[in-house]
Image (tube, rainbow, N blue to C red; front, side, top):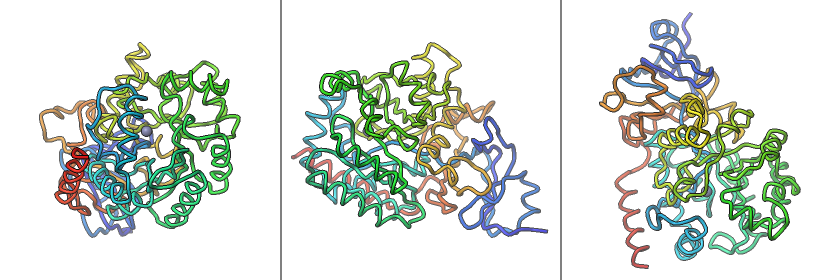
Length: 439
Ligand SMILES: [Zn+2]
């Protein structure tokens, strides 16, 4: 008996990510109502399903949609504005003044739309954002068809988004309510960092995150200076302070974590917190190297993020995977650390797990959403193919992505966005660059 499917997508190689280290040869993915029905040998699929559309992608690899577990989408408009500086100088002398001058509803909407265009075109189907005006990020995401986790930012600084802690919380909860029923949008508390959020607000976040059942993302242990200053001010290392305030739980996504002591590894294991590794941002700002190989060995869930375009400077999760694999080997002195398939897990299922979305996304499996990316191998840099996983992690870039589906909807077709007007976005961003440079 045949089953009905909306679409069959065939490719010579499909990397499902789960099960681990598996590659399906000459298979097809059957999709119905935005979900994966089955993945089976191509010939069987054609017999088993009545389908509306069949897409044959010869010379392609299919992977799950990539998950950018930490970014600041609107900062694309600050790309390349202040490079080659240490973190605190970069933040306090360049980024924060520029944000004070420019961040508005319009800035965030245009910057997020630009970032989403870049992310979709390079195979990212879900991103975890931290920025002001998360409602605007949410609108841009809905317009584009990407999946998004909107960071409800909390910071002890008055901005165009909110004047004080009270207003940050009120507006954050309003954003949570506004988007709570959208199938592609969820929210996450996003306290900026231990050095910019006080004890009272952090403790309140711990309580509310539990009540609202959402994760918490925070920049943590990014630099040695952060640890020294925290110790001088409070007598505690930042992670100890978070533990005391009730934030060290499986809800926590600790972003960066370049500075860790032995007992802190044990605590991450004991409390089940997740680490989000941003290797390119850490290298560019010379913040240090997150000890990913050791975290991974201990079974701590490590996801990957690009961070914002002002400290990377792109949002390409392919280069982030490669950087994560290479930096892990260099910094651990172990050339077997973070093998290619592990790097791909970090960019997919580990991100989903950290965000509490792993029932729906992160791997190509029956019952999960059809968030799928195809990589076109018809280019010298991607030939010949001995090992498709190696090709994806060590050779491919976002520019090799040809098609992207989110919940079964084609959002990139033959390298072009189907939902957003790329040329209009580029014109808008160029006009922002002119405004910003002329002050
Ligand atoms: Zn960041």
